[in-house]
Amino acid sequence: MKQEKVAGIDVACKTLALAMRTGEQTGKVRELANTASGHQAVIKALKSAGVQRVCLEATGAYHLDLALALDAAGIALMVVNPTAAKRFAQALMTRSKSDAVDAGVLAQFAQTMPFQPWQSPALPALELRACARRLAALVKARTQAKNQLHAASQTTSTPAIVLADLRLTIAQCADQIEQLRAGACALIDADAALHEVFTLLNSVTGIAAASAIQIMGEILVMPADMQAKQWVAQAGLDPRHATSGTSVNKKPHLSKAGNRYLRLALYMPALSAARHEKHVSGYYQHLIVDRGLKPIQAVCAVMRKLLHAIHGMLKARQPFDGSRFYALVETPA
Image (cartoon, rainbow, N blue to C red; front, side):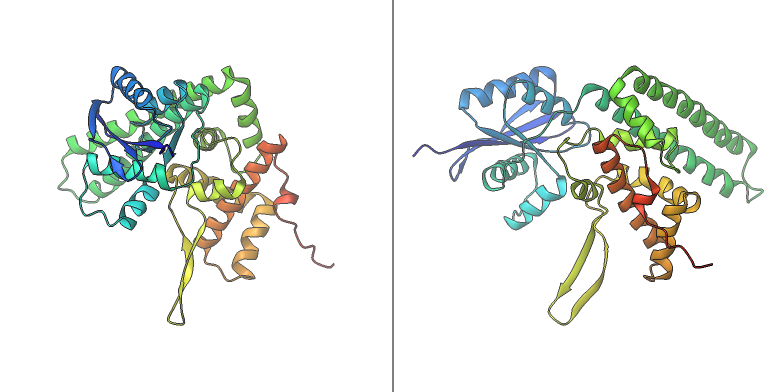
């Protein structure tokens, strides 16, 4: 019986480690450049060896061009969550960590685990995600500069030049944010599909242009056939339970084993909606008053339910309906 050939590719900023595996044997790991020519060399090697499927780990933005090249070449590809790859390596009791070892582990992952084919996102969605993530970095930098300015202003020992530099940094970040948001809005206006999603998201009280850009940048690159529960897991908003026998019974908490950008994008909209949208506010109060949740726990629950609502809105192509989010209980007169 002919044995299946698989491959694992460990992606770094400048290099790729390619390991091909047949049965119980992993071949010598090859190192190639993480460039367009390197990607073509990987494709040639995979096709020459008759590899049937490939596994690589999601590595920031470094894996994306390789994944697109493999997909365009018709090679069956699976992109795995780094946490899943790490846990798999631990299950194999891998004692060392290097690019070559990681590539071998990914090859075993492709051989052992159920294959989930990677779906290439549309180019406008990828462009919007790049804008959204750069915006997130700029907002974080501006917040850090504001905090530093506040701390520096509390003491007379801080020279005026330092205060001026911090104010300049804040102003520059603000200008960059404004320009980048304008560019993101231009991308959205130029694409009918993006514009439709943008309009639907803006129907939610608490989601304005800035939040819509951040949310769209993350959800639109996910496979179109994902269910709402999978979105929640992808965002790391699913509860993690820790129980064992009679001695371990911890309270559930967020797994956070997912996309931190999506969690961040949902936080302020959930907080705003809990204050200003009556149905979301009713749900928020129900969680605190009737179920005894702390405010931050209630906000996280609103984030999770809001993500479910967005999934339903996009699937039905219908604007937000608060009555479907939470039915308010009418108090007797």
